[in-house]
Image (cartoon, rainbow, N blue to C red; front, side, top):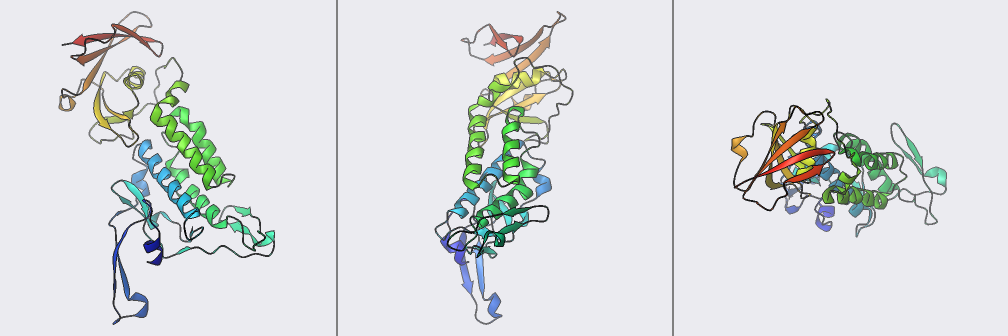
Length: 319
């Protein structure tokens, strides 16, 4: 309760109040009233879109950065498990600070500073102050790697971002990164993703691939993905013979990405409104010619032709 009173961060549940009862067991006299959240379900998280899983990992990194530089000193979460976290309005928060500690391991020499985990051990330095340097920070970071990053970061990530994510996994798994370097690496990935710069690293010619599946999707009723632009959506749909159309909606995710609905047969009428843009694909028998008919409502300024990803698309304006 003391730590919850003194630590203020979006990644820590809020303490709304506490009650003291001196009639019962001495260890159970204080009852804390905390911000309400839902238990973290890792199996459920694995089925969410990559963007949401990245958000959770980024939130965790920001929390660990705060704990490493808190007003009370470096804080370690001794019982670092997914069950110690909850989801509040889509945001990850640590809820159990009972086992948190500001004490760093005392030492006389470097041999006293081995950080042990079930599968790995890391030798650390003993500082002139007689403390194992950065042991709290590194313990938190490796636990984040083995409980969160390993499962949530790689799966279904945008191909152009996978090398950067692999670097993060390798560097945190070997503790070559501290929390400062880890946060910078995550912010770099976020910048590339939000700005759409990662798309510039994609091949110019997208060939048909059989491994594309509309999963994970933001909706269980259809194929709802997040995209940076209509061009990216066109490339995805064009690469799949079974994709006939898609709709770009005005809904945006937490990174600013647009929402778009893919249809395997026809445009879904329930998703259409005056604010939506409908894209419908038609193919011709001409060799190597694939045309995507893009239907816009009341926008006569669009060009008649535009080249995307090595394929020619014909733009038709509907008034």
